[in-house]
Length: 141
Image (cartoon, rainbow, N blue to C red; front, side, top):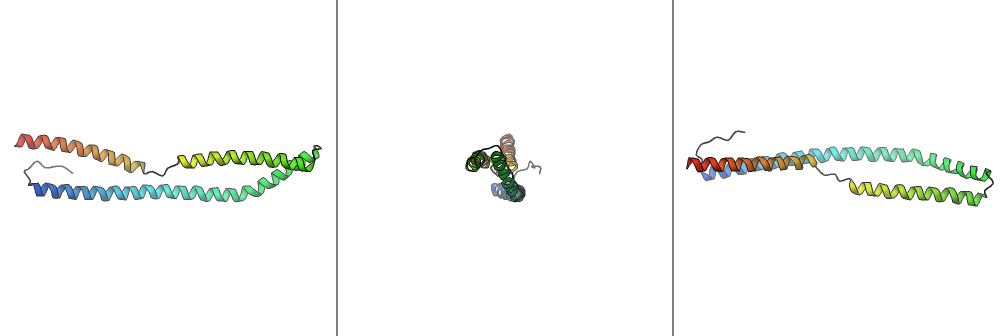
């Protein structure tokens, strides 16, 4: 939108500022909603795939752990110790994965980065227009 260089009254200028600000807020709100919707859709898909994979992996893990216990028993280790070794190793690995997963979830923030960048750009444009228009009105006066 081009700014015309003609004398306008203060009420006209204020009405124009209010209208432009309202339009800007409306568009930025729409952008934020769209961006957050995209991020939520991506998160929902990721959680769905994670749950599906976990449902399939849990029985496979149980079978593999039982096979490990059987292998240790075949290597002449008593059943009790074989189960404790496999269970302890599994517990340790599980705790490490849990800590890593929690730290990653804390780091992932669904922030509307494009909207923030657009607001910063809008602020720079407004600053430039205010400086430019202020200099124009001083010369005209």
